[in-house]
Length: 235
Image 1 (cartoon, rainbow, N blue to C red):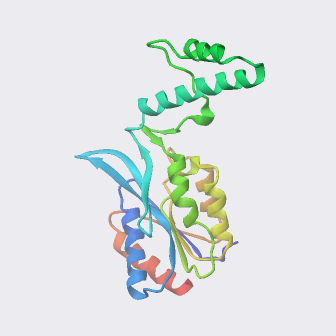
Image 2: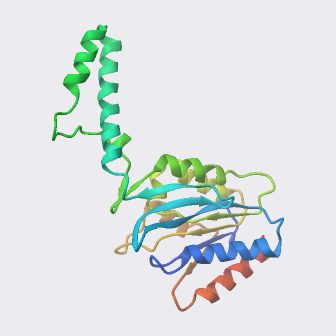
Image 3: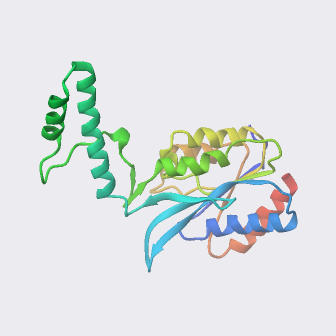
């Protein structure tokens, strides 16, 4: 497990500046030592005018992809609906020895009629968080490689460990491996909603190596300096 003081957790209400703080610490570390090897990712808002329509995941090496969006809706459901129908029919064709004509006819009969919706299994849905659909595959393709423990890695940044990210079944185990590596990590976590924590977030809060910083608009600069000082001492 990570030694005490190796895991720095920044929490606070939405919009208080958690990501900004993390990125300023990252920039300060790199400016002080360009050879300092930092792995990880952060999330940023996607806006259309004044409206927030989603979030992107961005690696510290500049790779970007969607994390969640309000725009992924009927298009995705229609695509998944077609896939589910086709898979059902192909399975019956393979197991039942159907001929081609019967298979084609069954595809046409199985397709939902106008105004109807196919029930899509939960396992293939894009999970919803509020009004956003989470692109788990996109998130995993960018975030998981950044959480691989490698020789020569000096520091990890994880922004954030939250409800969207935890829809990936591979994400939290990767975070735990980072903690077990004893490499210092700076991560952001949400505040408990209605007094209840997300289970994965609660495990991080209670980790023996965790130091928690609660951010507010009044203490942002002081917390940033405090974290930077402690990171330098432990790195």
